[in-house]
Length: 156
Image (cartoon, rainbow, N blue to C red; front, side, top):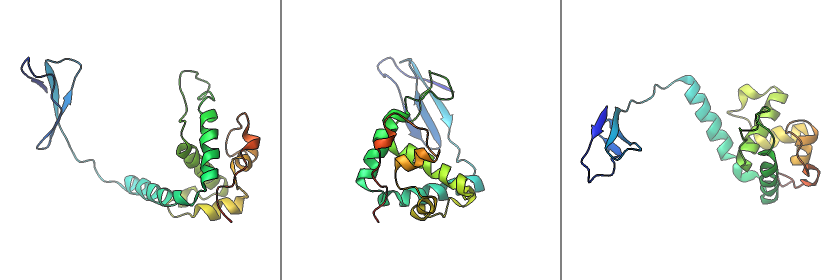
């Protein structure tokens, strides 16, 4: 529903009761819509468990390992996205880290158990200690200079 406001008001946004006001490019009106709580599903709960598990284990990565992931992410984002030069990949280290975890879990047959998996154990059982190992095993695409990214993810 459109909400028309006075000429001195530039725009409205926010909430009122169970409704949400959204600004538009036009200074003459805003949109009002009813906000509904999304239905809770088992899929949502599962994704929440995965996020909680992976987020709780981020602190175990060494600073040097994070720096290598940051450097890798800068180069990774320039790889064409499925051959389309207009799309770009995420250029942050956490996105690359999450991709690596999923690829290792898939390779180990543990993708259904990723909501409770211990990352350090999973990586050590696969012999992955750094970005170079992951690229050499085909778990991450090779980028220029990946051979120098040898800082370990975990302290021994």
